[in-house]
Image (cartoon, rainbow, N blue to C red; front, top):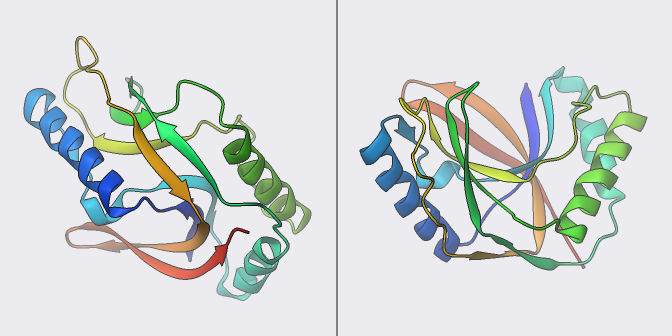
Length: 171
């Protein structure tokens, strides 16, 4: 099972980000993410044995965080993997804290997570043919985070599909 924990944007944020993705793909090539796949990854577990699913859920069960708001307000491009993304210009303390606590709890249970620092972003376009020049502005997209989700990634003929396995409300 290929699993990750993520945040899912509300309809208004999805619409705004999808419009940016479509326009960017039209101008610079690549494959825009389908609206239903837009998310912000908190922790990527990768391939795990189905028997370890309950350990991942137990890690999330212990999270005691409050709901919060943050804004995606900048666009970026990673040339090494041809990804066009939306992110935050300022450090979002509650978002960073949620990702840190979840990561710590998963590592305590033996999950091997990436060691690089958490870089909150939403992938908008994959396989972008050329670097966008100049990077367009992104009007701030407000995002209310009231829960986080454990997701299974499944390969499908149309690309990747995500199956939400469980969600945890934030206080």
